[in-house]
Image (tube, rainbow, N blue to C red; front, side):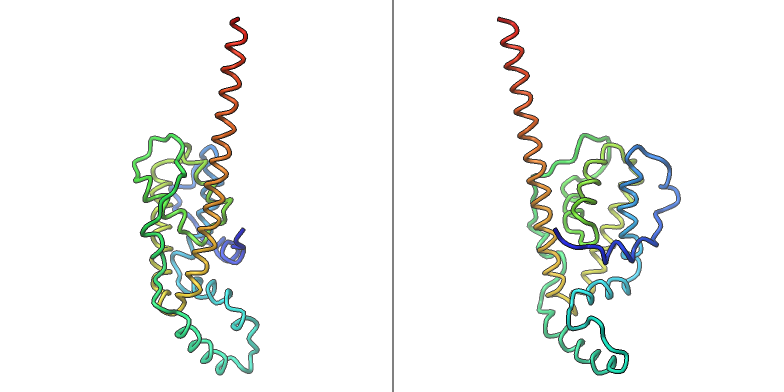
Length: 207
């Protein structure tokens, strides 16, 4: 599983819209997950920090060599960026994940594309959002979409300098999404087996 502690750690200071902080059954946990993206989506400095921490050559820079190391890091960023643009791989994204029944006004495929493509949430947080969809308000979901869109926009801006690193992170998170898909497939299979077993018991009981 991808280690996202560096994202959720520095982003907890973000606050959701005050109008969205009312109590919802299972809604608060989802809002807390979304809070880990709020500051990130509004401040590109955090994104710069998040991406640079992926670069072992840029870690633990000694204070006396910051200028020289910074220049070398800049050249390396330019060399490594390539032509990759963040979220490019999401253009052809499809998924077997389905949202639970809800009364929300949203494009499900678009929402899942944004959720799966986020590199600021852990696999567990993404799954928690999916499982909570039937209990979230329209305003909460609209806010999540806004945050996801803002996150994607900010990372697209960083693609010119950190394309290779962002591509690597995206691949890791898409691998996590495959695990989410598998978990729902396994649950569906278990539920189907349980229904079949119940049907067999009913048939035997009627003999």
